[in-house]
Length: 167
Ligand SMILES: [Fe+2]
Ligand SMILES: [Fe+2]
Image (tube, rainbow, N blue to C red; front, side):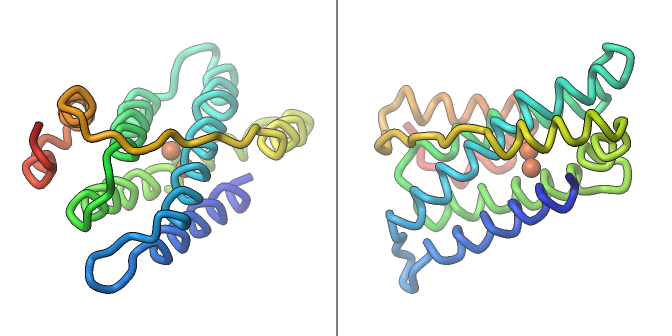
């Protein structure tokens, strides 16, 4: 399972790199593929992995669950505005930290790998069957930019919100 999800992280990193064209331009096709893939990935973690890890933990959420969920909120919010090189830099810096926590020795993926064998097969089947996610057109309204800032602040990334466009 760790392997499957780490491969997805690497695949998404490559898509984001492909979306970055020299001169600070962004290839919308690749960026949309990245957004859709990342939202599906987050959905797998929120709807399948975190609940499974919680069940195996006697029903109590993992200590890292709240942080991971707040990160997901910040990441999903950052996918809404029109991307700029500054926004992508913020997104990359959050993703790098976040993926490190998930991939760590006692991270989310390692915990899920320790679940009972039968359950692992069931989880893998559910991950593979996770539905594709459609992306919305970008929006740069004050409401959206405000939501991005608040999501960054909730996830303790307020130091990054200075490089975001203001509403
Ligand atoms: Fe995640
Ligand atoms: Fe992940």
